[in-house]
Image 1 (cartoon, rainbow, N blue to C red):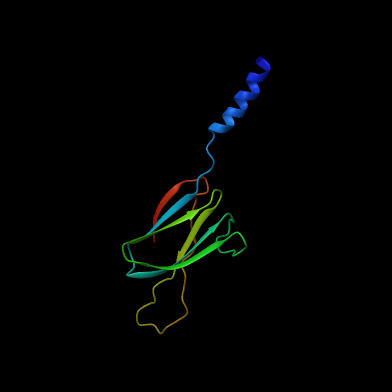
Image 2: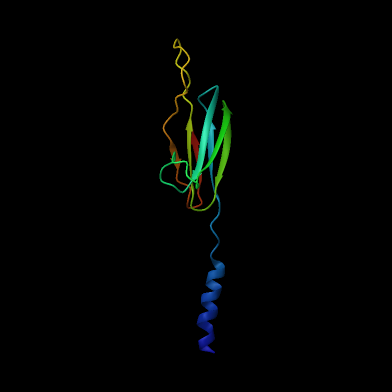
Length: 114
Protein backbone atom coordinates (compact mmCIF):
# COMPACT_ATOMS: atom_id res chain seq x y z
CA UNK A 1 0.00 0.00 0.00
CA UNK A 2 2.81 2.43 0.90
CA UNK A 3 4.38 1.77 -2.47
CA UNK A 4 1.28 3.24 -4.14
CA UNK A 5 0.98 6.34 -1.94
CA UNK A 6 4.12 8.14 -3.18
CA UNK A 7 3.38 7.79 -6.92
CA UNK A 8 -0.22 8.89 -6.36
CA UNK A 9 0.91 11.95 -4.36
CA UNK A 10 3.44 12.90 -7.03
CA UNK A 11 0.85 12.51 -9.76
CA UNK A 12 -1.70 14.64 -7.89
CA UNK A 13 0.83 17.37 -7.08
CA UNK A 14 1.33 17.82 -10.82
CA UNK A 15 -2.42 18.37 -11.15
CA UNK A 16 -2.30 21.30 -8.74
CA UNK A 17 0.22 23.31 -10.77
CA UNK A 18 -1.64 25.70 -13.03
CA UNK A 19 -0.42 26.04 -16.62
CA UNK A 20 1.28 29.33 -17.48
CA UNK A 21 -1.20 32.05 -18.38
CA UNK A 22 -0.89 34.55 -21.22
CA UNK A 23 0.41 37.93 -20.14
CA UNK A 24 -0.66 41.38 -21.20
CA UNK A 25 0.58 44.91 -21.64
CA UNK A 26 -1.87 47.81 -21.34
CA UNK A 27 -0.31 50.63 -23.37
CA UNK A 28 -1.84 54.09 -22.90
CA UNK A 29 -1.34 57.31 -24.85
CA UNK A 30 -1.64 60.26 -22.50
CA UNK A 31 0.72 62.54 -24.42
CA UNK A 32 0.14 62.71 -28.18
CA UNK A 33 -2.97 63.80 -30.09
CA UNK A 34 -2.63 60.67 -32.23
CA UNK A 35 0.44 58.45 -32.46
CA UNK A 36 1.63 55.62 -34.68
CA UNK A 37 2.72 52.63 -32.55
CA UNK A 38 4.42 49.34 -33.34
CA UNK A 39 4.44 46.40 -30.94
CA UNK A 40 6.41 43.16 -31.08
CA UNK A 41 5.55 40.03 -29.09
CA UNK A 42 8.78 38.07 -28.82
CA UNK A 43 10.98 35.86 -26.71
CA UNK A 44 14.01 37.28 -28.51
CA UNK A 45 16.18 39.63 -26.41
CA UNK A 46 16.39 42.00 -29.43
CA UNK A 47 12.98 43.62 -29.93
CA UNK A 48 13.75 44.74 -33.46
CA UNK A 49 15.28 41.49 -34.70
CA UNK A 50 12.28 40.63 -36.90
CA UNK A 51 12.89 36.88 -36.81
CA UNK A 52 10.23 34.17 -36.93
CA UNK A 53 9.45 34.51 -33.20
CA UNK A 54 8.26 38.11 -33.53
CA UNK A 55 4.62 39.08 -34.03
CA UNK A 56 4.44 42.71 -35.14
CA UNK A 57 1.38 44.91 -34.80
CA UNK A 58 1.10 48.38 -36.28
CA UNK A 59 -1.69 50.77 -35.17
CA UNK A 60 -2.70 54.35 -34.43
CA UNK A 61 -3.43 55.22 -30.81
CA UNK A 62 -5.50 58.37 -30.13
CA UNK A 63 -5.02 60.61 -27.11
CA UNK A 64 -6.32 59.06 -23.86
CA UNK A 65 -6.72 55.65 -25.50
CA UNK A 66 -5.36 52.31 -24.30
CA UNK A 67 -4.44 49.23 -26.31
CA UNK A 68 -4.04 45.81 -24.68
CA UNK A 69 -1.44 43.51 -26.20
CA UNK A 70 -1.38 39.87 -25.09
CA UNK A 71 1.66 37.61 -25.15
CA UNK A 72 1.90 33.84 -24.83
CA UNK A 73 3.81 32.37 -21.89
CA UNK A 74 7.55 32.95 -22.27
CA UNK A 75 7.23 36.02 -24.51
CA UNK A 76 7.57 39.73 -23.74
CA UNK A 77 5.94 42.73 -25.41
CA UNK A 78 8.09 45.44 -26.99
CA UNK A 79 6.80 48.74 -28.35
CA UNK A 80 7.96 51.92 -30.03
CA UNK A 81 6.23 54.97 -31.43
CA UNK A 82 6.78 57.36 -34.29
CA UNK A 83 8.20 60.65 -33.06
CA UNK A 84 6.07 63.67 -33.97
CA UNK A 85 7.50 65.83 -36.74
CA UNK A 86 9.48 68.85 -35.66
CA UNK A 87 7.66 72.14 -36.24
CA UNK A 88 9.12 74.49 -38.85
CA UNK A 89 11.10 71.65 -40.44
CA UNK A 90 10.55 70.23 -43.93
CA UNK A 91 8.88 66.82 -44.07
CA UNK A 92 11.33 64.01 -43.37
CA UNK A 93 11.20 60.23 -43.10
CA UNK A 94 9.61 59.08 -39.85
CA UNK A 95 11.81 58.78 -36.78
CA UNK A 96 11.00 56.11 -34.24
CA UNK A 97 11.58 56.05 -30.51
CA UNK A 98 13.85 53.37 -29.10
CA UNK A 99 12.19 50.02 -28.40
CA UNK A 100 10.73 49.65 -24.91
CA UNK A 101 10.16 46.24 -23.35
CA UNK A 102 7.53 45.02 -20.90
CA UNK A 103 8.84 41.92 -19.14
CA UNK A 104 5.60 39.94 -19.03
CA UNK A 105 6.98 36.49 -19.89
CA UNK A 106 6.19 35.15 -16.42
CA UNK A 107 2.45 35.80 -16.95
CA UNK A 108 2.27 39.30 -15.48
CA UNK A 109 0.02 42.17 -16.49
CA UNK A 110 1.87 45.47 -17.00
CA UNK A 111 0.49 48.99 -17.46
CA UNK A 112 2.63 51.50 -19.34
CA UNK A 113 2.37 54.90 -21.02
CA UNK A 114 3.94 56.23 -24.18
